[in-house]
Length: 316
Image (cartoon, rainbow, N blue to C red):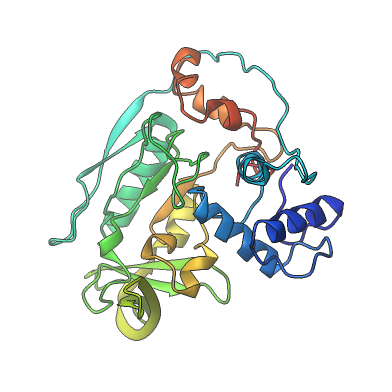
């Protein structure tokens, strides 16, 4: 079970009481998981060095229980997943190094490592992008099993199972006039539309209200970001749609990003291959075992708490 915005009930009320007791501000203690409760959860997660997504699953619940600590408090949340042992699968998928492009002096890599089924879809997308005169930059794909989570890195990241790639962060939202990608807000949602620039004369010009970030410091010297927009007319194609046509979905920016949070919360660069994942059925552990032996998977630092998490239930 996972608690998120829109959830109602006694368990949410207990969560709100726990947050209030710890000095956070979840709003009315009414059992309704609204915006203020989510903000309080994110604040707690950041303080606890957890992935700050505003969702309360087993890891956040465990951190809350530890923080409460006092025997006088009886607000402990029980959100532990069922303890099941996963059986090792058959033939393992191989890890494949796929091509990527560097742009000017903006950093990134010329390779991205993905598991073979994802790599096949990625290579097809790469060819489609190049056919339109675009490029695909890379900040990486596969994340090693020893890689630690952080406020910007989930314990159940698609990078661990080899299903995700990131484009180079400095290639968008920096200077729309020179960036190879224009990043546009997708309506009022927290998602983006990534437009890739091209010199192909068969691709029509569009005027895009492109987003970019400006970093400043407050009176205490702490950095914060301001999101601005600028109209840019250029030959571009919809990279996000093209990626979706090949099975890759983008993810939402963290809410904190729109409140001056770090640029790392923008997440415009992250795409993950979701083909074959069944909601409420496919588990994180099963996906990990498609690329690793059970012996290696058990060495994953978050194996115990992540292995039984189900897709679209308590795994994103």
